Image (cartoon, rainbow, N blue to C red; front, side, top):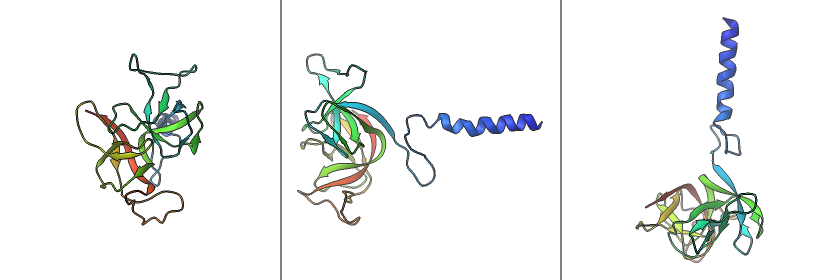
Length: 179
């Protein structure tokens, strides 16, 4: 009976590790899990932390591009509500033609210009690498939900809101959904 209980305890204890796949941090009551993906920067310049990125596709066939090792290409766009939205850069910086990490699901500070409304959907904007309000329409995608209109940029006071024309980062719950 003790052996059975010991085996059962080991199985239950190890079960949590299986569900942690693709979550690169410890998840407990004080942290938030997020899913990340390694991608290849094909934007022509460095991508900084918080940049909104889209899948880079072959314009002729509209299929995603991959590097020689199978990593998907990402770039930025100045098209609002683009259907090719991929996620948000979590690496400090991804130099051009290098690999880096993006968040494809979960909480992440995200670049924005302007003042957005809390608890609303956000998407790619007309400013490359930044998010803006989402306008639902056919063949568009939302990046996720704006959690709070507060500036999370390094060095900013936690009570600073993002006014128009100011660069800042706001917390977004990335959960890409398309129409």
